[in-house]
Image (cartoon, rainbow, N blue to C red; front, side):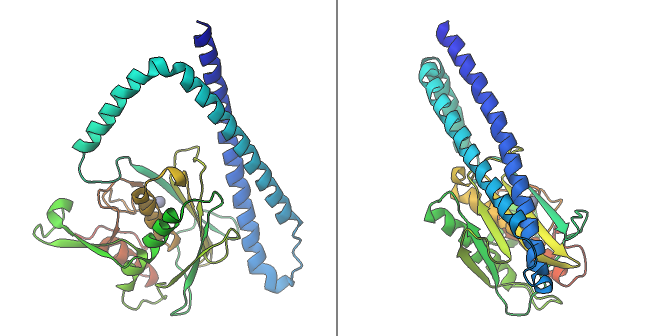
Length: 332
Ligand SMILES: [Zn+2]
């Protein structure tokens, strides 16, 4: 009885700590966003003001960001400690249940088709202009032909090189895959559809457009987040259960900077990580969500073929030709 009481007390403490963690994570996201916006303002106004912009606000925010990060680590450690003890005491009761559960998970896994993604992946994105308005339609990069886009990977939690390679591959791979239309429910049913593993390969197939489609990406690992596209591999869990989030700052018709956050990056399989990077990078290039649930750019990624489709490529082409809204209309 006493053990039961202690176990439920622990569960309550863990619940409270998790709540605290969720508040802290939200606060951290907010601070990071404020900071990113300030930096963008600084970048775009520096040449006008000749370094007149006061840096105190930025250093205050960085201090706040560090403080919250430390608090998050402390809370996470407390949760881990409590969870470990709870598991020790409860393992006699829980182990048989776990064994049954594992059996179900394993057998379901083998019954499922070859898809690596067994759970739907939730994503979201936001486009904001310099006035802070978010009711902006998606935009494109406006860079000189042949100029590479710099992509920086922020990896504060020191993820393995394998994970970094996975991220790079989703951007730089030129590998194409050909999937039978009969498997996709597309026509002609005896034909095949082309998919790409990486954006470089997909974008390289696009003929000249009104605005240059970036095809060269200079990827750097740096915690300062330089360049046009910043990818943050976070070990934090998003409180609302999202796996990926892209936020783009735009001015008039032009994207100035895109920030991609991948949540729980250490817990994702390489295939899941590659899928999320592929999807979020589509947003970073200007693509909105598609209505086709079988496409990579659907808000909830649920396709068995989470690669860059002909439809996504056509959407980029029309976006950079400024001919329509860049929506992937599911070409049959
Ligand atoms: Zn999305």
